[in-house]
Image 1: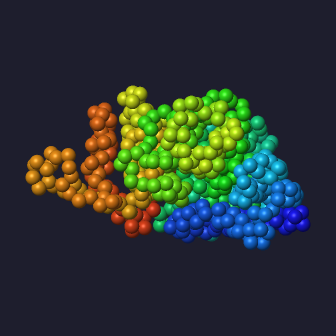
Image 2 (image 1 turned 30 degrees about the vertical axis):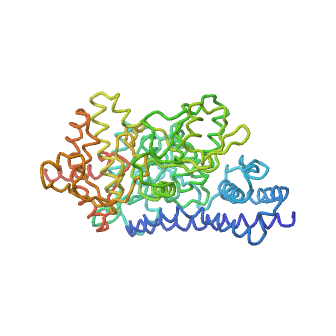
Image 3 (image 1 turned 45 degrees about the vertical axis):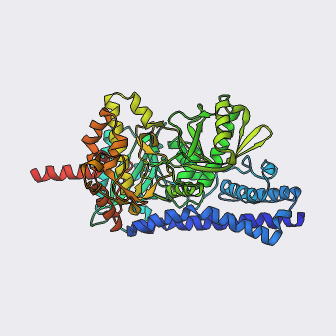
Length: 584
């Protein structure tokens, strides 16, 4: 069978190259979609790109079955296939992605006992350092030649957007003032003073982001500049982010993935790591739309962490879910969620529906309010690291998802999310200031999800979490729906007082009927919480808010969601200066 090893390796590489060609084609078109302000096409492209990878893997697996009878290939031949494939990686522009594609194809064919480094790339075989790219991963600009202001104007003109800026000189003035205020004073220019800017802008929703760093002596200053469409006109610089943590929030997994045209994605990730050293490579690949590579790196990081720690997996703190069994590893900032074999009372759903809801979340704009999830199959965890309580709960509630193999417990299907503090636990320990912030954030999260056409369904406090930045995020998806699929109604007036006092409803309720006036019953039992909620979000308890939002969505309106605070927007500066000039 050695004679087929080389053509099989070529077939898998051709499958990957087709995938990445289509991926780049979609990302390359992001520029024209942005120029045309075709926001519906932006959303459609993001949804479609999600399925690219699995479709190409299926195509490749089908070809290997059809042309090479893949099931009959012996293990020595598979080792030869990997050897030939490794040779193909040496001059490849995306070797790390091609390795992951190989793993996906081979794992669809081989039994799990072959999932080791002899047959798949458990460890990377090809270096991603210093891969040449055309165009280069980033461009360098030198302010000493033309001055900083002109240099900034030049770099935006060189991006080549067909739609012109409304007033680039005005916007650069705003940017210069923001940088000056951030630095306190301009540092003396050193001999190596330069701006390094990633070649492709990052496109998401209605915005484009130009990302780079300024280098001056031994200092490096990261920046991300947001570019939007000005109402009734051309392009406009909207804000500059100068704090690494704010730029990191751009790459939050709670937001939609970026579109960026990258010949060498590892170069982009390496550059981003230089300005965001605390951001795992797995998250950066994921946010660049390369979710499978993000999953590969995450799993390697998890296995590495397990080898260098000794704490045990435990049941996650908080109220147990009716659909998911959730556990965590205290030393690792994630939670692991397995679908229960039998759902709790009141949950009218099934496994396939739950999986479809989680897939929906990956396809929509998460607007910073939905936790992204990594979906895994056949995850092996050492039995010795699973607490007795958790092991008992797993076998009691999710036995169909388990398999025991030597020293490992195999979980056939699970989701992994960033760990957050459950909102109900947070509120129970919060002082008055923290409680007001959290309740206000909770209502804002519901509003923003509604504007993004998402209705959470189960809005109990326990289904929301508080991030390390104090942001409230929704993370329980088994009842999530498109807002436009819901029917928001007033509670009909009772025909007589006795019925109004009865525990039984006196009106008909269809499957997608929602009665906002009922929310208060299960959300506002605490007087502290109730007073804050009614102060900021009383309109969420009436159908009118929801009906207005539905109407905007059905008319095709797409809301603006800015991943930075309003006070950083240059539009505020321009409005203030305009008022001052009029006053003079």
